Image 1: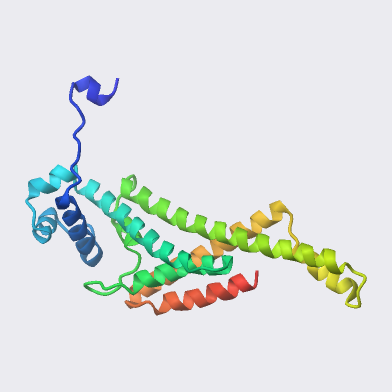
Image 2 (image 1 turned 180 degrees about the horizontal axis):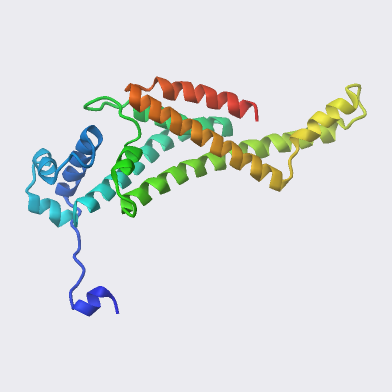
Length: 238
């Protein structure tokens, strides 16, 4: 029997009206500018222009509000990424769209300037077991998964072109065995390709996270632009 069935109570249906949006927007501004722990419920309701009861009609607790805020931050980043992806013409462009989305995020207007990744900042304040930490982890895993997807497409395309080139040229032309060997080295079997993709995606994810941290400490997006340039060089060298 469920908890609701055991107590005879029906689960409370949370409202989805304008007040919820105002509360989330106010929480987003204050949590990012001042931190989660330093921001009280009274501060959020005052900025949102709602009564405290309105907040609790929409969220079970501050912890619930923090989790909702982190989910909204994730969706905000996905929106930036999808806009960049829409302009991507090649798998290489798609990989760099991930970096561009973070650079765009760093370029948004913030009350106290750019302070780094809002999800990581919040996660650092949350205790082990808080659902918000799981939201942040899923976000980071999804970002790395996007890199894996785009890198697999890029390297698969390269391998296919290398196979075609090898078949067309063989080793009978004037460029001889050396050129044939170079082409063969670009042709990866499925397992080797997957390993190369995973390693490259992890490498790029580490580069991305390090750049975000430094950009947050320095208060601008310069490190993000540098990271994008480094990522482009790494991708071109795969």
